[in-house]
Each structure stands twice: as structure tokens, then as C-alpha cells.
Length: 450
Image (cartoon, rainbow, N blue to C red; front, side, top):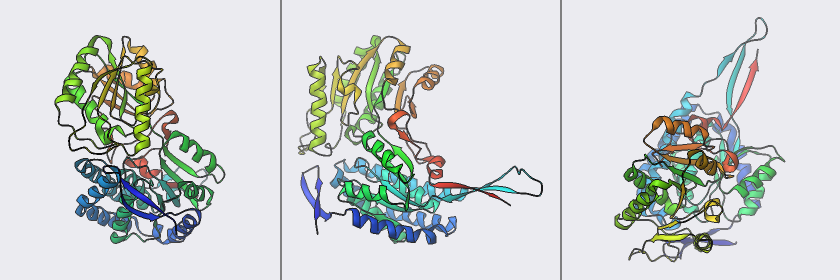
């Protein structure tokens, strides 16, 4: 039996190894999930809700153990991992409660002595494919609404971070979710993906990852007409107007940029600063970076660090300047660590301004005209998140309507919660996660006339 190793990016040491699953193993898990579907969806919503709440309380009771697993396999600091466990767990509680508020409706009839009703039914077996950057939250955000609605699940976590997923599933089964209702596969991602795409039993795929993979899933899913919910990354602009509260702005941008060491699809990547306050903002940012006690983890692996170095070197070769670069903390021993870095003298054509930069690099660009910067912000294939800092709320709301992004933060970079809606425009994806719309994605509408 072939196996593959799981590495700790903090030490680059092997934590353990797991079975390398592939096409055949995935088909077996899908078959089991399909057979288990009928009994799971036939449970009363209240019964499924009760099981999800048990899962929530079990996770809460073992939150520190889960955070330690995440710290070990993903690299983020323990305190940050603990925050993610609580954040991810909030989706389970929310959907355990929200599923009790899914109602049908009576439609206008079109003949006398006739009734028309619309009801919602679970879509079926769902394939959930999750990334490594948020090994808990990206899973619960998909699994909780799927299970709540009555779907069965085949989960494929990232091969970088499967241990958190295994622990979450173990607790779900302890809470009462049947083993075959919540299947898990990991190993050969190409063969696992092929099995999920070719299976007619899989009715929906929920995926978070790159645009390239998302497009591939769309293309191949067309053969069996699967429903898709896709979150495909971002290159978030952050527009700072000259009337912004710069102390608040600096703190919020640092919070957004340091989440998971910048390895987040919502991280503020292109920081557009009004030219008249560029020096004041940059000085405040550098001062805060140099004085604040910042704890960030390493990047996920050597490839991620190489990509970060490549983007930085490309920018420097084309005229960018390093304005500040922190020293690595004395206790930071990982070869994958990349220090917080501020660069200026950028233009929109540099690779670091055009690509999703999964790193703690603050890229400073300037503008002098509002309509010009809105056009520049929108000049991207991405469309997930954008940020705006200003003291003028009316202006902020007006600009928000012109920005082609699914999530807009005004004087804020924390935009995601269990009750909020998350999803992108353009090539950043299809469908929505979070909130009630995130639950409705897992239902089909059935129209009945009698």
C-alpha cells in the first residue's frame, strides 16, 4: 500500500504518513455515501440539527487539540489556529439552527380547484474539495450546510493538511453522523478528482482553490451536469482616501494582511493610497510594523516561499523599492518563514500587482484621481474582496457600487462570519457560502401541482 508524508512547516519534519488513496478508493467512498443518503435525508430536520449541535459541542470541548493539529500541519501560530477553530465551529452551530427555518411556499395556481407548492430537497451526494490555508473553517463552511440540508458528503481535504479534517470527521461520527454519510479521501488528488468528476452519483461540487482548477472542474463537470459552488481566490484592492483615519487603516490592513501570514484569498494585496497621504501612511505602517509584537507563521512550503521571492524579485527588477523588511523573530526557525515586507514605487503591470500574492508583502501603489483608481481596482480577472478606507460614508457606499467585487469592507478587513455571505464576481467563483444563501446552495427546488 502506497503512503504519503504529512510535513510540519514549522520544522520541515514528518508528522506521520497516510494511505495514498486514488480513483478506486474514492469510488468506494462515493458508493457508500450514495447508499447512506436516503436514510440521512429522511431524518427530520430537528434530528439532523441535534446531531450537528452535538458535533459543535464536541469540537468546542477539544478546540485546543484541534488547534494544535492545525498548528503542526499548517504552520499558523497556535493562538491563530484557536481562533480559526472557533470561527469554523460557528458555522456548525449556525446551520444546525438555520436548517429549522427552511420553508416551502404556496404558489399561485393556474387552474380552479388546484394547488401549487414549492418545496426544497437536498441535492444529493456532494463532493467538497478544500484548501490548505484554512484547514478547519473551509471544511465546516461546506460540510455543516451540506449535512444540515440532508446531503451526504465526500470530502477531499488538501494533501498538505488532512489531519485537521480527519479529526473533525472523527468528532462528527462521535456526534452521530453515520460514517458513510461523511466520507473522506486524500492522497492522489488527480485520481481522486477524476473519480469525483466522473461519478454520476456526485450531484454537486463545492470547491475552494485556484482559478485554473476551478475552470477545469467547470469543464469536466459539464459531462454530468453537476452543480458547482466555486471560490477561486482574489487579488483584493485596498483604496485609502485622503480623509481616512490612518491609525485605524494601518491596524486593519495589518490584521487583514497577517491572517495566515498573508495566505488568504481575501488579504489586501494592492494597497492604493492617495498620493497626498502616501508618505504619512507608509511611515505609520512601517512604524507600526517595527514596534508591534507580530506573530505570524511560516509559508506552507518551499514552493510558496519560492513564488513569494519570485514576485518580489520581479518587482525590484522593474523599479520597485523595498521600504521596510522585518527581521525574523529569534524563535522562528522555519526555512519557509518570510518576513513582513513593505514595497513601493510599484505600477499595475508588475506581476505582484496582477497575481494573487499569498505572502506578508505590503504592496503600495498611489493614485490621484478617484475614478482612475476605481478603474485600476476593477482591472483584474478576480473579483472576491475589496477594501475602502474613508471617513465619508456616503462616498464609501457610492464607491462600493462601482467596485466589481463580491465582498466590500469599508474601514474593515474582517468580513467573514457564519451569518455573512461570501463569494466572488468575475473569475473569483460561482455561488455563495455563509449565511442562509450558503445553506440554500445544497437544495434543489421541487414544484408540485395537485
